[in-house]
Amino acid sequence: MKILGLIGGISWISTIDYYKQISLEFNKRLGGSDYAKLIIYSLNYQEVINNNSKGDFEATYQVLQDAAINLKFAGAKAIVIGANTLHMFADRIEETVKLPVVHIVKATAEEIKKLGLKKVGLLGTKATMEMAFYRDMLTDYGIESIIPEEADRNFVHEKIFSELGKEIFTQETKTGYLSIINKLIDKGAQGIILGCTEIPLIIKQSDCSVPVFDTTLIHSKAAVEFALAN
Figure 1 (cartoon, rainbow, N blue to C red):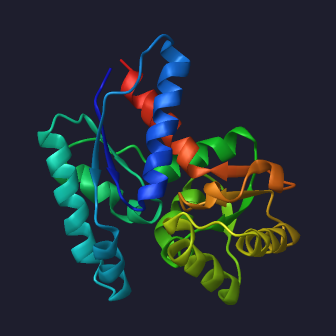
Figure 2 (figure 1 turned 30 degrees about the horizontal axis):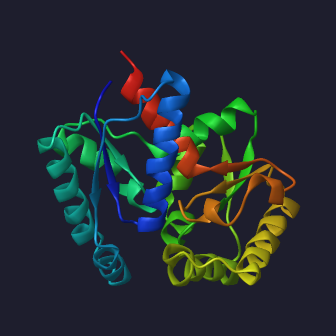
């Protein structure tokens, strides 16, 4: 069993979900009282928000790199970045820190491929929806992604930071998210990627008429798969 290093705090509430899902998946596979060997490095999310709001993604990378290096020194054998957006740095972290990074987009793309879907809607932060790193990787797997219109992207993004990341869940926000999801379905989306680790806390498969891809759960299972592989 390999020790996993989880970079969390982005946000704290989804980090709790990661810890829970990784622990449950370990126990499901091994039984008894077996659970993951896991080290968590929790970031101060405000630093990341401040850097990104100024467009200083290099400063955000340095925060992430420092966390990964500390996890490596603590004994981690792989890095799990507990956020979709920060996977823009995944390849660079892997190269610099010299540890494998369990990649959230690759794991999600594999799950989409298993269902044979070719076109999916993508929800997440504005960076995840608008920057190329996420959608380009899906394209590499033969998956077309569509994103909401600008006003809807702003709504999804704002609610992540003002509510979901603070453990605030309202029916109004859920209704708004579902309306946006239905617009994407009307545009041909065969499935929906919940591409922010807070979104699965408010949107569930039972809410939607097409498959939804809970990236926190998918990523957690991929991390367990790596930890238990020979």
